[in-house]
Image (spheres, one colour):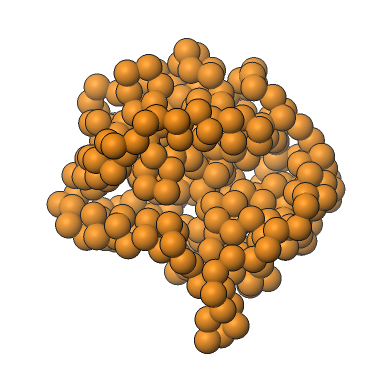
Length: 334
């Protein structure tokens, strides 16, 4: 499997490895235990900022219009922007969600023009990437990386008055068509900022849907760690990857939509990247299909995935890609 940035679509039969994390994280243990008994099909929605969320909705809408409804999966796993998409597609139709993106008021593209006439990240986005890259480079392993990221995010937020949390929750809640957890199994991934332990929320966790999504999307630097009860949480993409496809262990068919193209900034020997997770899934008997952004989608994303102006073109490109892939995916999914 090719995991270079924004590779083209790869279709591969796979099997899933459920490497349950050890440790105190009862939320993750409870949620993952509940899905082990599960059904046949899992849909994995990866993170990727505003553009990535729009692309996910576009792909799902394109598949839907071509006759393939993946929103009826037995399990949906959402991480970061993918957690928003997971909550959205379980409470509104793909057509409604796509129309909402395309009808939104136009946004001015952000960032200075680079030498290739594209926009280059500035301000918080560039600073976030720099800070997290330095932390990842200094870490000894994945657990150490998560602890360091959590500690750094908490330290950055130590002087805040907490008002950012209220605003962030309102922002996230406004993106969701419903504030209620769906009846089907949806897993929302985050990381405990104090301990570095992975956390998986579901409808049995005693956490509001908007809070779970807000926690999963809190990158810890541009958006401070998100508080639920006595705990603070950071982006679920720090758990293992922006996809966390390994949580689909035990499902017969696993469809992964990865806005970030399956890549990781962690050392490859840590096994954090999507290809390693797919190999584990294969080893356990699952079939896995992976959809990564094609060249048109990558062009639509630009260089700043948080740029709101990229949402309509990213959604359109995703829609076209979904329609084009529907024939190949239908036999696998059904």
